Image (tube, rainbow over all chains, first blue to last red):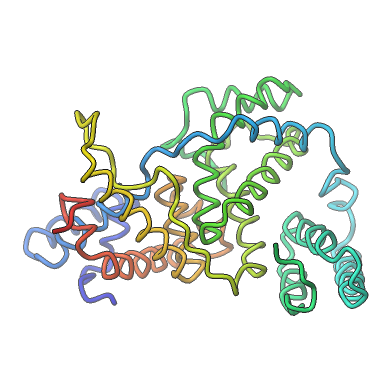
Length: 145
Length: 202
């Protein structure tokens, strides 16, 4: 897979992550290495293909975002939560995950609960919660659209 | 650690966000309109081509931005901030979608437009569409961290340290992810993506 990447910093060079000395070193290497020059050129072309202008969304999208942001629901990550000790947060998070499992078994509003729990996990940046959620077999829930 | 880079920033992004932080709903609408196109395409690629999931993820991201507006730090880069939130939401959703290979090509996507090529002929359009489809399929087939890294780099314009923060990893690991992602995409898209001639194939 990496046959052409003979210089270890060629991607950092391409992405402008090297200082002046590092860039000069890569450029000196490039002058004498066809494989690296080719790799650099096709990586640049790939980047250009990925960063073309994106088509505008339907106007309804902006309206939908406004409706969701301004007129719906409770805050996802309230400040009181951030103020709790870590042990409390872990306990409550585990409780939420267990509740989610129970809900999934009962088959009630599973999709909504998964979404809520995923929101919680994302809001809290809690890898432990995400790992717990990942263990729930998707097939038991029918949550997929 | 911050979001200070400004490579992909629309000129008025920081101003819009500053007004959003002061509860300006009109500025929020403008922020959504300005950043939604890029974020929607990014989310769609992150989620294997699923347009409905992508819309939902981007909506959710903006909802979070609105709710957290009072905690906005003016030193941050708006674009980096938004891409980071969307990336994390998409990575959270990925496990639901893992078993579903959805490889829809993305509408309107394709080879970079050539300057002065205002009216591309039918041949060029067809090639663009094929490249768009091939690119979407190969992106969907990448390991998720590689996909996230290369999309955050090229669509979001994030620096390595910013990508590392978004993915909970180190800048060195980001360099490695990008190296592997590019090597794989180059080999799978050989002929489409060649030096100085993107989007052409015999």
